[in-house]
Length: 122
Image (tube, rainbow, N blue to C red; front, top):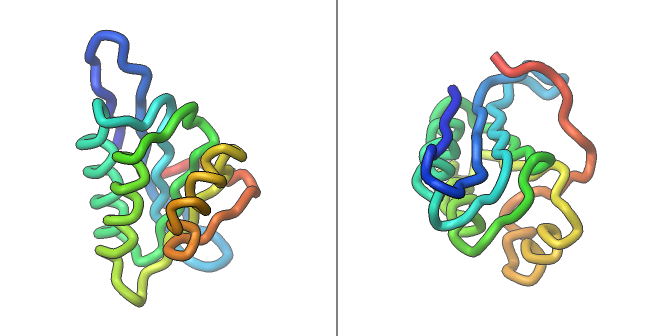
């Protein structure tokens, strides 16, 4: 699925899909651009769809240039929605993003992984 807000000045695009990894089927959310209040609804909808598709979700932040509190809240809410049997991994967070996850305590809810995620989504 492909979502983007076509608003003036909005630099955001998102791709969601499935990958079959060594650990099993995984839903992947790949936002590109700025994750802020302007795109909060689209980002939240993508995370919700991914969580509904698979218990294991990867949020690949390789293409994200910015994330604010609304983006962090969306990730936290999605992780909580998964419940105890779910798993959420945030891939390729920039050093500043990693620091935000640590300062807010979100690093205790999700796994942070610096390795890039490769593969075509389906």
